[in-house]
Image (cartoon, rainbow, N blue to C red; front, side, top):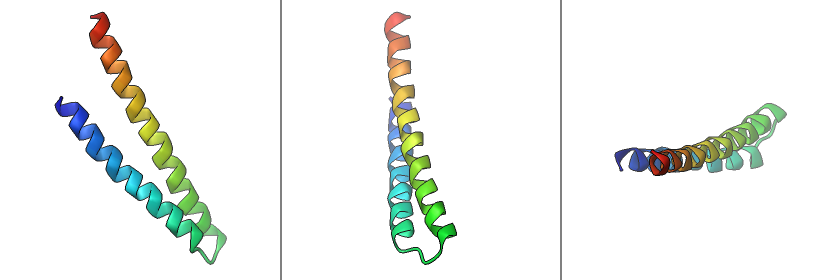
Length: 65
C-alpha cells in the first residue's frame, strides 16, 4: 500500500512537470527551449507509463505467488 501511495505522489509530481514542459514549449522564443519543453513532456509521459506498468506487474506477481 505504501508503495502505491508513493508512486502516485511521484507520478502526480512528474505529470505537473510534464504540463510545465508543454507551457514552456508553447511560450518558447528559441528552438532549444522548445525542444527541452517537449522532451520534458515526453519524459513525463513515459515515466508515468512505467509507473503504471510497475503497478500491474507487482499486482500480477502477487496474484501468482
